[in-house]
Amino acid sequence: MSVKQIVVLGAGIGGMSAAYELRGALARDRAAITVIGEGPKFSFTPSNPWVAVGWRKPADIQVDAPKYLAKKRIDFETCGADRVLPEKSEVLLRDGRTLSYDYLVIATGPRLAFDEVPGLGPGAHSQSICTTDHAQAAWVAYEAFLKDPGPIVIGAAPGVSCFGPAYEFAMILDADLRKRKLRDRVPMTYVTSEPYIGHMGLGGVGDSKGLLESELRQRHIKWVANARITEVGPAELKAEELDERGQLAREHVIPFKYAMVMPPFTGVDAVRAAKEMCNPRGFVLIDAYQRNPRFPNVYAAGVCVAIPPVEQTPVPTGAPKTGFMIESMVGAIVANIRAEFDGQEVKARATWNAICLADMGDIGAAFVAIPQIPPRNVTWAKVGRWVHVAKIAFEKYFLAKMRSGNSEPIYEKYLLKLLGIDRLKSD
Ligand SMILES: Cc1cc2nc3c(=O)[nH]c(=O)nc-3n(C[C@H](O)[C@H](O)[C@H](O)COP(=O)(O)OP(=O)(O)OC[C@H]3O[C@@H](n4cnc5c(N)ncnc54)[C@H](O)[C@@H]3O)c2cc1C
Image (cartoon, rainbow, N blue to C red):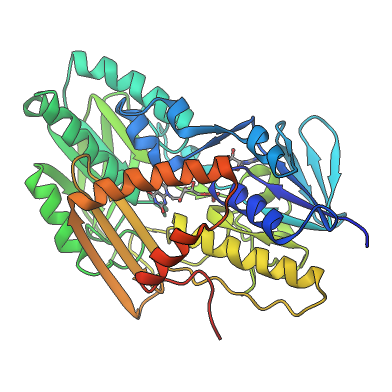
């Protein structure tokens, strides 16, 4: 039996889980597994908002990926991929070498498209929490802001699909400023492309509208929804608020001393260069089994996957891809690659349930949408202190899992079963 080559592109939540689970399903005499990352660190992205207020140091939420993967006999390339060459079943690395694969799992997450709004992003006038490096830079800027506080704007630009972190960060900043007794000096505004508060790119989840409006009101955070952010200057953010027909209703110029705005996403350059594999924004096209229709030995999981918006909105919004959904995509990929190895039919499908725990600094909000696209079988949103505690537990648990390589340990399996949540679709 020859050993097949599996390459996993990206060492984030999707890529690391895929590598460990593939190893769990396929022994070394069947598959050689190589992960390609950008540098040696795995970062637990959901904790970035805590880094940005100094509640975590980057090292607290990062793991030395090559060290722990090696224990499971998984190779790691740190130089990053320059380009996927699907016609040749090869990945060109940034150091000029190429890796051949029998199967490729793409899990590169997003390219952060700051270029789509003038003045957006850490290279210009707003902070970002999308990567741990950005969150660390946001913390440095926040420390300076604390010495001379003023207005804060938190926003989500047109085309954003990831709204949870924007809400989270607004509430966490509020909690942090209250602890520091500085909240009275900081007017706060949330500006979003969502048609209404709590839409979250999902058409709402349970009463997420009422719930999040109430939280923002209680925390004295004003909001502008259905808004197209058109420009971020050094000290003010410009936005056009639309009515429900998409006509201009009002123009806003909001001054700030500190701004964090979520950018829209596209596919990363190394992947979107392979146009025949991607949609126009560079996200990887997949069939029901997570395989690329044109190149069936290419699978994809996570934020890099092309999924349509849940609904049309006056200002464009996208559908979020949250952690559990990503793990469910990974579960389907691993089952399907294993089936291919065994000469069986590929039939595992991800459930794509949206489950999100959003921290608010002292309490938190949990959202469950099963399935993600309405009409749904289960949909609820709840606020409580237990969510804040659950989110910390999730961070500790996931980082431990990245060190142990123990994919889907027994308690995760049973806890999710208890909540009526399955990773894979049963036919
Ligand atoms: C701030 C923030 C908070 C979030 N919080 C939550 C949450 O609380 N709960 C939840 O369910 N979801 C959350 N999400 C959504 C989602 O779970 C995360 O974005 C998650 O990290 C996505 O996983 P991923 O594997 O698709 O991409 P990522 O985790 O972004 O990983 C992609 C990896 O690929 C690497 N890569 C990219 N290009 C290349 C290349 N050319 N060569 C090699 N490597 C490459 C990147 O460096 C990165 O390490 C959050 C998202 C953000 C941005």
